Length: 191
Image 1 (tube, helix red, strand yellow):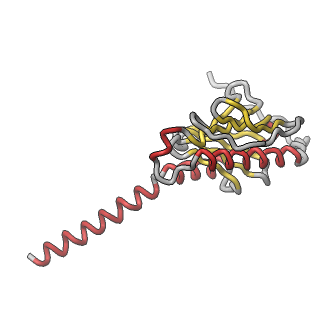
Image 2 (cartoon, rainbow, N blue to C red; image 1 turned 135 degrees about the vertical axis):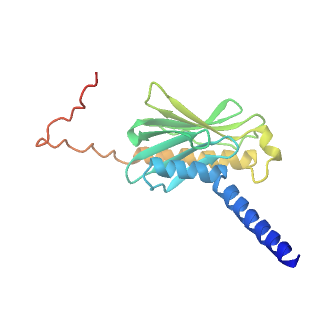
C-alpha cells in the first residue's frame, strides 16, 4: 500500500512538472519571441509584444531587418529597414506622436489619458500589408494581471517612436553587389 502511494505521488509530481513546462513553453510572449527570433535568424536586440493580442514586432539593427508576427507567432512577415516608412502612436483615435522617414518627428507633447486604446502603428512600403498595428492598451486590459496602464502604454509607444526616428537617421547600407561571375539563377519550369 505504501509503495502504491509513493508511485502515485511521484507520478503526480512528474505530471505537475510536465504541465508547468508546457505552460511555460506555450506562454504567449515566449511563443511570439521565438517566432520573431526564428524570422530574424536568432538576432533580435529589440522587440515589443502586445500581450493578450498575439502580436509582436522585432528588430535586428545589425542586419537592418524587421519582423512582425500575429496569431501568437503563427503568421510572420519580414521587412528590410528601408521598407519601414514610419511609425505612429495613436491614443483614442488621435495620432499623438509620429516619425516618418524623411520628415520631422512629432513627439509626444503631453501624456493623454486614454479611454479607448493606445496603439502603435508601423507603416511599411508594402502594397499587400501597408501597416501593422500593435494595441498596447485596451479597456479590457484593466483586469489582466501584469498589463500596462494607459500612461505606461503611451510612454512605451513614445519610446518606440523615438527609437524608430533614431533608426531613420542612420545611413542605409547599400544592397550587396551581384557577383558577375555567377550568372542569374533560374528555377526550372514545371509542367
